[in-house]
Length: 407
Image (cartoon, rainbow, N blue to C red; front, side):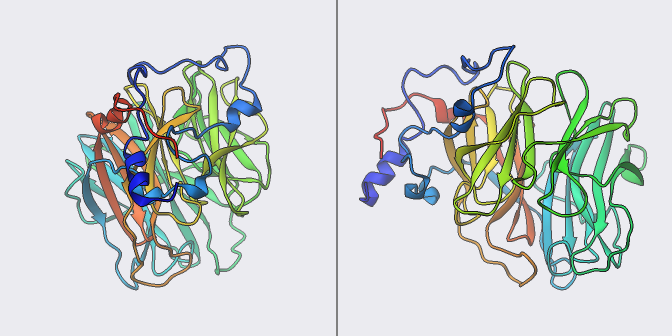
């Protein structure tokens, strides 16, 4: 259907079918049995939004409904000093929000890239940046998120050789900086792991172990790796290769209602791109071979999390061609995403040139707190912003309206 008015009418009704279950009660799936994993066919069917064309190339992504939210600036890039800013993270700790990111002089992964953070009591007004790592002349730091480990908070940063810099022959390290509640600042770094770069922050598997999915500290398309442990000490990990070496990037995982785990990955840059998935029935010790799904993706990083209302939210760039828009897809069972709406869909333009500087909304992450979803992202890899979305906005996508017209 090509008529723009008809498309808008269909898009406005795309999300909701009468008679759906309440969003507070996730639907069950016959695939989610305790003794087995879903078939490849089930894992491949990840995107199924009523009313949208089956072919993602026919979807006008910018015309999807936009969620209502409050938009706030955390950090704005500074020419020749921090003209590149990326890998944002957010947490609520010690009665305040903390945002973490890395920035560099001009472009991504170049020598001198550092990690900084800012604080806010309400996520709308942020402090001036505070240096976490400092700069190294020949190497680079990358922000790797906040780890809430019991009663302690760590800020994670990876130190590796820089692109265009010398081979220092130094081992890549993942570092942890512990929050000091007395000084209200992060302390000196401790080594978490060597030659490991996490794609997600450590999270608890159902068996109580901490679990990170990531890769080695050198190169981009080597084997993905699972790091499991972190209980007896912050450096106690068993690291194993994941299936699909050379095919996958940007790992994410979460726990399903049946206590199995599903992981999502970016695939290689052979367009069009779709997310891939692996499945684990043993708390992340072993994983199935990757299955390419039908969920379209721009070749970026995405973030999936389970909300307190039972819904799964996937923060993603679904447009094959661009990191515009930034969208949130929703699922009741963690496998099939059947609602989607935009957070940001306006066109953007970088202010300065730099390595891998591109337009759009990059590397989004979400944090649920006090009835809101706090999303943090970089714009053009120059600025860091937050959009605060009430959970009610997401739940409304499942409220019964009229039957949608399929494209």
